[in-house]
Amino acid sequence: MSELNLRELHNTEFPVPNDLQSNVAITSLSKIYNWSRRSSMWPLLFGLACCAIEMIATAASRYDLSRFGMEVLRGSPRQSDLMIVSGTVTKKMVVPIVRLYNQMPEPKYVLAMGACASGGGPFKEGYNVVSGIDKYVPVDVYVPGCPPTPQALLFGLIALQKKIDGQSLANFDDVPWYGVGPSEAVPVPVLGPDIIDPRQMELIRRAAEAAVEGQPIGKREAPKRQEAAAPAKQAAVAKTADSADGEAVAADGDIDPKKARLMKKREEMLARKRAREAAKKAQG
Ligand code: SF4
Image (cartoon, rainbow, N blue to C red; front, side, top):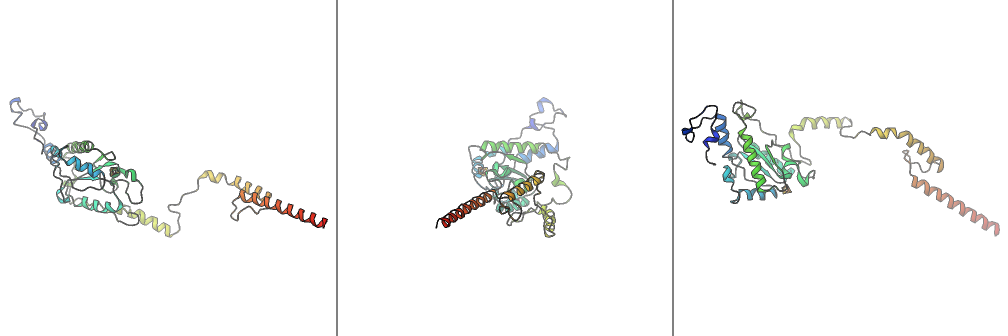
């Protein structure tokens, strides 16, 4: 835990005599509460992909996480208050991640480390990757990079500390875990062919019912530009039908100019062949 700085805690609205300032501090309850929380944050020990290597490096002696009171990475969500999502979040892994988040006690925070955790990264819209962990759990700090350096992660952790410093015990929006009743768990997504967010269940159900009734849910409407071009298309069909006796016009009305040209050539060849045969007969 970092050293207690009484001058930092001191609230100048209530002046303390100069000779007592290194021994006495007058401060608000929120400030001492935030100071103690942000100076003893225990991250949950887990990594998902390459970003985890940088997180491990951050926890090693060179960068010294213990300066921030964060060196105690816990192996259990029950003892952690910070989740560092370090790496690519696959559809398979998002389910245990949300479950672990729900098992962490309040107050708890989430830091999305790297491009993958923040928005899918280089694998965005891949068949097996979710486009950011913030679609499933609330994220407090995003650290950009692929991977972010240990310095960038430290910067993100300091940003989180600043966020905590700004919270007030008097504002229940800042500290909802002191509200009436237990805090609500985040819905755990359902793993399937495509992962389902239970919060969207009503929307999915309505879309499925509409699809059963034959309504065009999810189908694209034809752009207006195409509708305006329809008379021109009919004219072209008529022209091609004139030139190739209608054979080049498909049954659904579509024109095949290549086929029309071939038909014309074939007609000309047959005509030449018939002329040659007639000439031979006349000679014979
Ligand atoms: S952001 Fe880059 S380094 Fe981090 S997990 Fe994704 S691909 Fe790996």
